[in-house]
Length: 270
Ligand code: 5BU
Image (cartoon, rainbow, N blue to C red):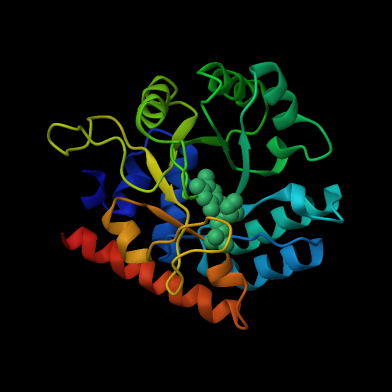
């Protein structure tokens, strides 16, 4: 499966330019950590981006929870991203008809297309949502944009399973120019008969619900460890409270980076 191929190799061979850039960042900085920066003010968001920038490959936002959001919030975040060489992933989870999601992606107060390298979408409404978001990318001027399909969720009782997850993979296969992978808890696209990678296919797996110390929260979140997620086929580990909510986020970020990178190296050695 893809899991035995290095980030350096995938950075050279991936057909999508943004995915190549993502793997190159991981290789250079030796990190597969995406911090989920679920903070609620611009000041906190920018200060955690600045502090954790050296240890992460991706900075994941929920920009609609920022209480004092202005375009300056994301202008400054883009500058920090350039300085520390990480990508920005807005976890917007688009889930509407094509006409609506195009407006939500390109415009509104948040103008997500302008500053987020990566977005995600659910295919609950069908394939049209991916067509619509892809067209927005094709018609825009930014070239380094990519979509993740939300194929599974980590919350208790999630209905994103079975046929829904299978359809996510099928739709991704038809939209490889812009769909770079999945948010999922495991490798999804290996050939089911042989467990081998499908030739010409290299979807990136982002896994949420990662914690070294906790099993879950009071609202249904379910965690697995960095090593477990990497064994199941994750490429990037999304960590939120495990990093930002303790007394020393930098030390936590380093601990997750080390755990994630060690698990990645041992998978390569296989
Ligand atoms: P936590 O603090 O590590 O539990 O935060 C997890 C983040 O990942 C949070 O921003 C969620 O919105 C996001 N998430 C998730 O937890 N589970 C999922 O299945 C998906 C996203 Br998709």
